[in-house]
Structure formats: C-alpha cells, structure tokens
Picture (cartoon, each protein chain N blue to C red):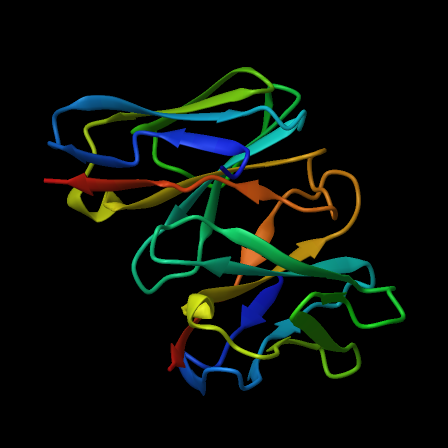
Length: 114
Length: 116
C-alpha cells in the first residue's frame, strides 16, 4: 500500500467512450499531480493541484479534464480519446506544492484506447 | 528548462554485486533537489533517495547511496549488494526548489536486470 490509491488499475476504452480515473490519498498532502508515462518517453507532468486549486496545466488537450473536489481526491475525466493517449497514468501527492520532501506515487492506471 | 539525462537504457548486474546508474542534469539554478525512483513491472513509482543541492554529504538510504558531484552536475545512484528484487526501471528526477515550483522532471530511465 503506497498511500496513494489509483483506480482502476487497467482500463480499455473506445475512442467515443467517457471514463474517469480516480486517485485518493490519506497522507495529509496538499498537492496532487497527474503524470502520463508513454512507452519509451520520460514521465510528463499533466496537471498540478495545490489546496484544490489547479496551478499547472502543461498544455494538455481538452479531452483530458481534471477535477479535485478536495485535497484527498483527484479525478481525470476522459472523453473522445485517441489511440496515442494509451499510456500509464500516474497520480502523485506531496506535502505542499513543489515539495523537496518527496512525492508519493500511486500504482497507476494502464489505459488502452482502441 | 531543466534536462535530465540517463545514458544507460539497460544495465545488468550479478546478484550481490554493486551497480552504479548514471544521471546528469542541466540547470543554471542553485537551489534544487534530485530524486531517484524505482518502478517495478507493477507500475508503481517507489521513492528511493533524495539529494538537495546544498547538502554537503552524499545521501544514503540503506543499500542506496547517491554519488553527488555538483560541479559535474551528476547524481549517480549506487546500489550495493544487488538483489533479484532490484530488477526494475530506475528514474532520476529533478526538482527546482522554491515556492511555485511544482514539476518533477524525469529522465528516460534505466532498466536494471539482476542476474542470479
């Protein structure tokens, strides 16, 4: 148990589907992150939320829509995705936005778009 | 923008031997942190070790140590007494210190295989 829980672990969806990824942490952290890990590419930061407010959006296409209802939960809503969006999506949290004291990652959701 | 380079796509090491995984970074900033993460096939990113740019001593955590050479901008991970369970992807990551700085910049990773 990493302290950051992501569900589902695996997801296969069609290009016309709508689905959501969920991330939950009970570490008392105030910042939460979505990262995308594609094959043979470095992890890419997608979104940052600090105290429930979005502080960073790294030019992510609008077919990815994040939601942070509170400091413990983070969602990534997906719609009309493309096959190139297939990747491992990792959620992370940290004590404060931009912490030097460590980010805790979840196990990820492996997404396949067909 | 910061850049992290891991030049070894794959490494092999004999069980019980030590191995060094390379990481270099490029930054003009003075205050930053360097992380190493392990990612087994299950996908989870496991924090291993952290080095702050102003830390005078190299960081150590159990069998992991970080060989930090600031002038060379390198932060190599040394794993001593390798175990079969060490087989995984290893990522070096850079974080710029200070308020408003959120991003961890990752290298492409090194796949370590421990041979029995």
